[in-house]
Structures are given as structure tokens and as C-alpha cells.
Length: 530
Ligand SMILES: NC(=O)C1=CN([C@@H]2O[C@H](COP(=O)(O)OP(=O)(O)OC[C@H]3O[C@@H](n4cnc5c(N)ncnc54)[C@H](O)[C@@H]3O)[C@@H](O)[C@H]2O)C=CC1
Ligand SMILES: O=C(O)C(=O)COP(=O)(O)O
Image (tube, rainbow, N blue to C red):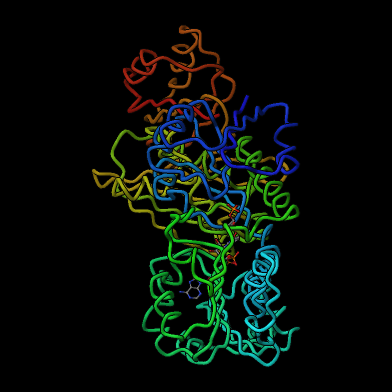
């Protein structure tokens, strides 16, 4: 049974598929302190959060079974990604489910700012009929600057267009083509701060975006401009904003997010009549909450069940078309790594992976993670997975080199894994995916073989002498080890050779030692595959 902890308020309807899953138990415990979470997290395989729970390194360290942290939303700044990656914990988010909702909130904030709606409402319900104090401005013909033209920023721009606004957009990934399609003029941050009547930010909080709008930017803004932050607290410097309002540069600001949430009671935004605030409500609609919870629950279920998944934020993204091509090779890749690790006992300095044939045309980076995982699993066991395999290799100074070739000998695809060892020697395992037959190992070191990589194997390197096969068979038989299949590989008669035996059960160290004592045998290793 997999145990899932939901530690923030997440839509019941959205997590229903987890609740309904026969192999999952869902427990909801919100408002926990870090200490409480550290205490209970060892029981859980998955943790589902929104933005309230801060998933610290200590929580990750305590999460002995923790396989995945699912963020029902976009921003993962409350999750220590580095700590997750080091421990092989997959972090996923739900990037699309709250785009429209947050865009609509930003738009609502812009309109509320333009027409003083919160201030006018407060005064009216207090019994004062004041029509003079709330003279607003139209959005039509105003210039809107959008910083961050990703999912939300682009939707904001589309709506602003419909309101007759001119839009200046800045995003390092915004191309001229896409800007044109969106009806946005590509601009620099400087163009935007100098020319916009309204500015709205839609970037994550990164070292680069922290304070992207600060004192220097406010200093050159149009007098009477208005500014909105429905992204992350800190993108617009809070103190610099208050100062710009006091100087009469900024006519009004609308903030949904704060540098520290919730803000202290004496936060300068909370009693400034020119600043309207909401308590991080950008994603808070029925629709968005259902969407993000459904998305994240679906992926969590896949991860728990070791099925392919998407939206991992601590692994590079892979296009679905690429994923579809690579997926059939994941098992083979991992097994090749496992075999390579088990036929040698030396420290590995470098792993050279060559993808040939069909595979040379695809971005194989996710597949390399599986190979490295298989390789390191001999020593790391379950502590290595595809999230941390490259990280663990790097931390151990193991260089991973990938090469590609169009020709794949007689195969349509071929993966070769070569280990460069401390002694300067090399070990090589190559395999292919044969249509209709599945995974096959087709080469070990210089010897061509044809092995189904499955179950328990014994790898023997020996000298090709008459009678050796019989001796090995007798020795194993005497030790009650049944041979299911056998492959012998040699280059020349009487020269170096290898034997790979598929056996029905694991063999003991003692049996392996007995095998190495046979005069023709140079080495005998067990290879265990799942
Ligand atoms: N208030 C709320 O409740 C919500 C807030 N958000 C926040 O909104 C932000 C945007 O979300 P999405 O549009 O879904 O993300 P996204 O990833 O689609 O877009 C973010 C964009 O920011 C751009 N960017 C990064 N660095 C930049 C820089 N230095 N200058 C300009 N652009 C830069 C990226 O290239 C990307 O296109 C995130 O911080 C997210 O956490 C998202 C949902 C709800
Ligand atoms: O998705 C995001 O990035 C958000 O900021 C939404 O946060 P929330 O899920 O409402 O706590």
C-alpha cells in the first residue's frame, strides 16, 4: 500500500482518483509545523502540497520512503529542489491547471486598481456616499507592460488586447514571431518601465527576477503608473514600491503575493490606501483547484506505480513525442547499466554510452539517466533513481559521455555502455530492442552474444578448452543450481571466451569461488536482474 499525505487544502474532487486507488491510502493533515511533518513523514511515499507547506531539507531527509512531492499548482519555491534531487525524490507540479484562473485574478486586480473598487466598496458600506474620491482611468489605449510572457503572462496579454491596450512584453524566451502572434511588442525591461501605464509581473522568483522592479526602475517610470504582482512576493521590491507611492510615481498597486506570507500586521501594504491586496488568491477558483489536484494526483499515481510520468521539475523536460520513442528502451538501458556494473569489480572513472541507429536521432538524455541508474544501483540500491542518478555520478567524479552513430551494426538500434575503469581497462555491454523479441544483450566486451537480460545470470570469462562447459554444468548441478539457458562467446577457437548462464536461482559466493577455481576460468560473476 502506498501512503499519500496531503498537507495543504487540496480539492477533494481532484484527489478522488488517489482516494479510489486500491493500492493507495490518502491521509489529510493540514497546518502541520516542520517538526510535526518531520515526525510523521517517514510513513509516507508521497506528499501533496500547495504553497503553505514549506518542504525543507530536513523533511526530505526524514522522508525515508518519500518518492514524490506533488505541488498542486505552479510555483515550487516552497520545495527544496536541491535536497529532493540529491535524495532522488521526484518533485512534480501542475503547470497548466491554474493559468486562466491566475490570469483572470491579475486582470481583476488591474480593473480594481483602475477604478478603486476595493476602496470605494469599503467607503460605501461604511455609510459614506463618496463619488469624488474615486475618479478612475480607462484601460483602453493604455500601455501594459508584461514581465514574464509564459503561460499566465500570455493569457493576460490576450485579454488586454481585447480591452484595447497596447502591450509591451519581456521574457528571455519570447521570440519576435510569438510576440507578433500574441499582438505584443517585444520590449526590454527598461522599455517597459519607462513607457508602461500598467505593469504586471508573471515570472517565477529567481535570483534574476528578485527585485526586477526596484528603486532604479521606479525612478524612471511614468508618473501615475499602476503596478500588479500576482506572481511571487519579491519580484517587485516591496520597500521600493512604498517609496515610489510616497513620491507620487505610482498611483496604485495591487498585490496578491508577499515576500513573507502571511504578512505581519504592520506590513506597510496593509494600511496604504493606494495598495490593494488579496491573500494569495490567484489560483483559488473551483475550476483551477480541481484541475491542479487532478493533474498532480494522476502523476503521483504513475510515479508510485513506477509508470512513466510528466511534469517533473527536478529533471529536464522531455517532449511527449520524444518520450514515446524512448520509453520502450528504458528497461533495456537500465539492464545494460546493471550488467556493466556487475561484470566488473573495479571503480568506474567514466561511462561512455553510444546510441546507434534509430536512437541516434532522438534526444536520449532521459535514457542515459536509466543507464546510469542501473549502473549505480549495484552500490546504491534503492537510493538511486532517474532523478538523482546523474547527480550521484557527478558527485562521485564519474564522467558520463554520450555519443551517437547512425550505423548500428546489423541492428536497427543499439545501445553500447562502456565503462572506463580505474586500471585503464574497459568493459563493454551492448544491447538492442528486437521487434517481437524484446530486450537482447548482443555483446559483452568483445564477444557477440544473444541473451535475454532477465533473472539470475552467471558471467564467466574463461579459456576456450574442450570440456569446460561440462565442468561448469557439473559444478553447478552439484550445488543444486539449475541452468535454464547458456550462451558461449569466443573470437577464436582455443582463445579467450565468455559463458553466460541463466540460472533458476541466485548462486552463493562459495559457488562463484568454486567456479573461479576451475583452471580454465579467469573470473565468475553473478548478474542479478529484475
Ligand atoms: N498568485 C497565484 O496564486 C499564482 C501565482 N503563480 C505564479 O505566477 C508565475 C508565472 O506562472 P506561469 O505563467 O504558469 O509560469 P511560466 O513558467 O509559464 O512563465 C514564467 C515565465 O517567466 C519567464 N521569466 C523567467 N525569468 C525571467 C526574467 N528574468 N525576466 C522576464 N521573464 C522571465 C520565463 O521565461 C517564463 O516564460 C509563477 O511565479 C507562479 O508561481 C502561478 C499560479 C498562481
Ligand atoms: O500555483 C502557484 O504558483 C500558486 O502560487 C498558487 O498557490 P496556492 O496553490 O494557491 O497556494
